[in-house]
Image (cartoon, rainbow over the protein chains, first blue to last red):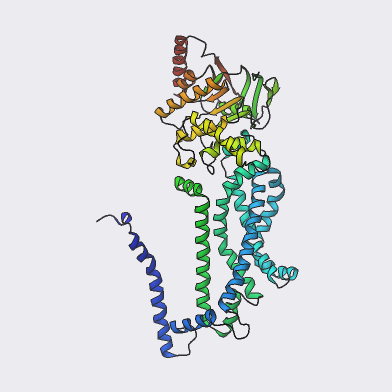
Length: 275
Length: 261
């Protein structure tokens, strides 16, 4: 018998072991759910599987009587659009400013202190200001995400740029690169895969800001729906929505990872080497 | 042409004197090897030639003019590590220098221009023996192959001076001797001036035509930074007799052994 620390699961074993906690959680949930429902069939706290299926099929596959929309998909589209806009704008801003601050000392001296201060402002604290300035429409929600994650992305990109081996910056200069060419041909491609990593890390915060903004002011959206049905204690809707949001978040993370691997094969190699 | 003249050169960081009173003449086409204990200013000296460090006092002249105070295309460099761009494959790494020159805005060429540059790059890669690995990324290459690539990459700019900062320090002995032949071939063909830092004294003797030994001439035990290193020996190894070289090498090696103790 090998030592415990040397025993590794096979592919199938890995899958089974990974699934096990989910199965356990499911069993525990439905056990207590059926216990509660046996005592009080109108209990709303832990709905049965049947209520989930009913609620989801009602929201996902039947058009809303008032608006004619399929609620789940309309909510998903609205939320994803805000999230994509917010994260997209943040990533672009973070990339541009981060590179400039990281590679040009004159800009760093001028901007870095401001960015440090801004990054310390809790974004939710200025949400009212955003509502006042940008109104209650889409813009204020997107701006909350942007303000929430851009400082982090700028600082991360800046640190990544400054952590590039000094040798390659000098080498590029001996190959005749001016500052612009150096940024375009060396710094940008070196930093792009790292930006994707940073975006993956910031997605959690982005969702947080999105749902917070939707909870306060929206007419559709995943966060809006959860907070709307909370008034009726509709756990049969809230829980599937939470699972759906989690699934979306997981998919985004997965797709970004695949993108990084597909577009920057050298980066995956390099990381493998340093491990 | 391309001569390097150094007069009364000092390099200090505050109170810390690294190099003192360096005087040196190097003719174009010399293969200069720099040896000396660690921390005695060889790398600082190379950085001044490169342009990333500036002398505190004195003159550092290339072709009679002060050397540029930032790195430029007339001085190529190969470091011990990180000399190549990990995001470009082998042939792109070599093409980069020419692409930057041809395309100021994008730093990237297309079509016929690109093809022409690519052919030049491949010719250079053939010379360094890397033409079988054109589309590989540096992370897929061995240490020796990465250094070959770094040399080819520097050569495409046809620099007047090639600076080598312990380029073979991390390589296995067998590969190292292959690299010696390669660098000598290139040096003979291009008649480029080479400055090479090495820890390996025999490497310094066998490759170079001019050997510079960096050492501190004065020591103050209470203030080790009070005195800087200077060039204690400037030996025209390539032109003197083999035997003298050997004797001298032995003297230096015993000296080094004593210093290390």
